[in-house]
Length: 165
Image 1 (cartoon, rainbow, N blue to C red):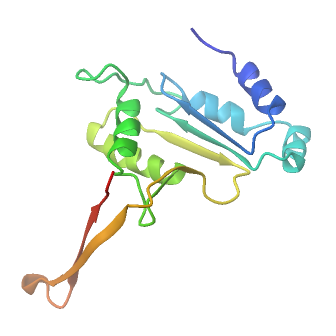
Image 2 (cartoon, rainbow, N blue to C red):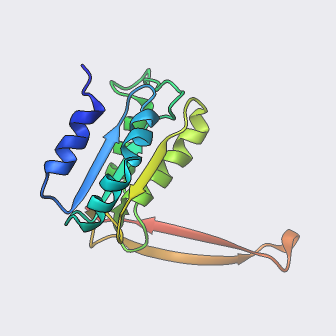
Image 3 (tube, one colour):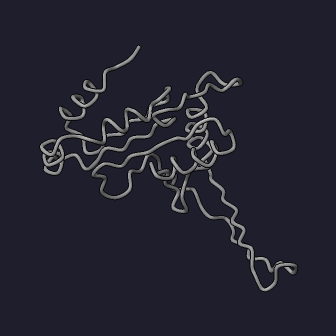
C-alpha cells in the first residue's frame, strides 16, 4: 500500500505539531525526501511563519536504490539498525540523548558495513536538536588515554559507555 506524497504534505501542512518526523523504509524512499524538501517560493515562505519548528526526514535509501530486507529479521535492514540503535542506546550521545542526527549517524555507520544501500536525511527548518529518547542514567563510565609505544607520541582515546535501565 502506498500513500501519495501530496497526502503526506497535506498532513504536515494541516498539523499543529512543533516537529514532524518522517521515517521511511521502502525502495527509492529518497524520492520522498527530495519531493518533500522542495516546494514553491510560496510554500517555503509559508513554512517560515508556521509554528512548526522543523521537518526531519530519514529514508532507508537514495532515490535510485532498493531497500533490502534482513534475512534474519522480519523487517528492512534500515529498520533493524534504527531499532537496534535505540534499544541498545548505541546511538546515544554523552548526555544520554538519542537525537535524530545521532540515530542517523548510527544507522549510516551500521549500513556502511552492509554495503547494500545508503540512508538519507533532510532537516528542513529544524531549530535545535530533535531528541527521540533520553536516559538520565546513561553515563560515561570511564575515559582511558593510553600511550601507544609504537605510535609515540600519538595517543589513543578509548571511551567506554554504560547505561542503566
